[in-house]
Length: 312
Length: 147
Image (cartoon, rainbow over all chains, first blue to last red; front, top):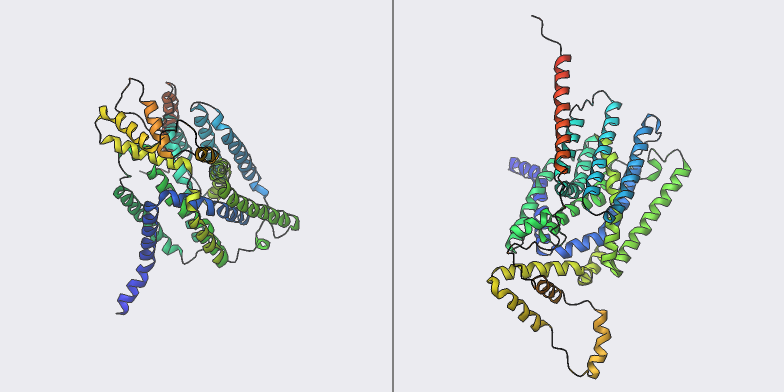
């Protein structure tokens, strides 16, 4: 009996995760548009706010030798973010290819700087993989965009795993089970879409071309986005609370400078105002607000790369 | 937690308001494509016209008082997505071209210039060469077992 109970206890996180992901998949398959709309309208703003808090917590107290790394990060975010806003004004796909090449080059350069910090990080495959990826992107820019669109939500799961390992939390053992449940929910979602006749060849074609009208694309993206929001709004703040890092005064970059602390508080207050404005905007004019949000959201996607590379 | 629940409840009540118009149009477009796939090609135009007539009541020849009142209200609303999609289909199929594989809206393949594949090949080749070079350098640096 005790062995059975012990076995159940060890299985329960995995079962709960499978149940939760399956329910999520079923819910999205039954109302993809509604859930996509509600998730963006209600969770996009708060998730950006929590992400800004997390990134502030990961900034070092003194930049010192890391100055080139953070300068390159800043220049990259600004250059790529501003040029991406201008991309729709260029016709053809050359602009997109060049932008993607700069993105790959920037992330590779960050990884090269990270490699120099410690001889343990040899990474001889770094440049060959980056070059091969660039080549693949030049041949199939649409596929690369698909990779970015779905890779970004998954990035949050990777960051969560790295954080659990960095702080040697006991939950890191459950993390693998949670990750294993993600494809299960996706399969349930796809089956639900199939039952509704939304998983045929036309839908797959629309999915591969990132058509916003494709229920398959919308549903799959909503599934990963909701996991992304759950990590940023739920899991990472909980982890910060468990490791007693939730107070701004304790952040390495802020604890010795009252001016920086004030600036961070103002920044977060501004974030709160923006989150409120987003909620209001989604109620008043959903389409304009959504377009505006996704145009600007590229900045938060870009900011994640330097912090992810630092976790490696 | 209570605030989040209240927000979600408000959102669920107002959900219809949030469903973006373009998604409704896209959904209708997808439904129409599926519907037409079951109908022989030569009967599709008639089918679409019949549907459009059923959805669009004929305009009255003499404007009544009711229609005068209704006009500003109608102009403030967006047209029925189904009507938009049916009209669009008819417009696209007025020409004598009747290719059976019409690409759906939103299916945009960026024009691939002839030089994109050579550029891709150069990158891949450079990556492969670098990988081989690194591998050889590593093998060279590895201490050889003494004979």
